[in-house]
Image 1 (cartoon, protein in one colour):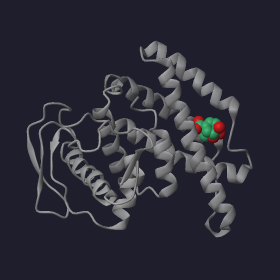
Image 2 (cartoon, protein in one colour):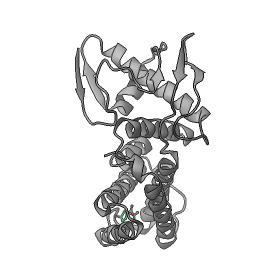
Image 3 (cartoon, rainbow, N blue to C red):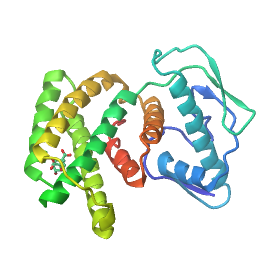
Image 4 (cartoon, helix red, strand yellow):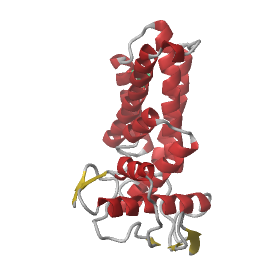
Length: 259
Ligand SMILES: C=C(O[C@@H]1C=C(C(=O)O)C=C[C@H]1O)C(=O)O
């Protein structure tokens, strides 16, 4: 078996118990789509004999952590009481000793911004405006840098986070415009005014900055941040019925959260 790390959302080594706060034994997860889901979300690429077990461990952990994340919603982020959670597809159980840090609020706003990308795409489909507007992008980056200084968070990582949001929006816009060009029957019937949509994006910027301040101390916690982000993005994408394109945008938009 050959296992390589393509990116680093999880700070664990092969053979570690995962997630570290959860004592678990892997439930049976066998379908091809589960494994494909694990491959896409784990940040690991695996080839050869034994990969199935490794990937099953990852997706099993995601399921358990997701269940825990949902059941622990609204409770304290640390030192939560122990809870027993039934593992999907198995009689085995996972025991939660400590809830992971939560990035649901930030992720929810990233998701909303991605959804607004659909409206931007529809607007541009009718106006013929290009996907990319470098002047507007620079205005956003300059503005969030200035806000970061005022709010006492790092301007460079704040700028990188918002650059990722802009890239995520462009992933959605390009994907939808390409889809509509290939299949005219799927095109929108109307498109909103771009200025109105940009106002919505500006409001989201304020919300995202507030969330970045709130989770600032969690963003450099390594594994805890990685696990929390994985749970938040996995459950968020499922809750919003994200398709492949929007999941891809979500991966782009959250790439700089834990660093
Ligand atoms: C969303 C737009 O499309 C692109 C993405 C942007 C963004 O995500 O903020 C900004 C400018 C464009 O490069 C837009 O034109 O407003």
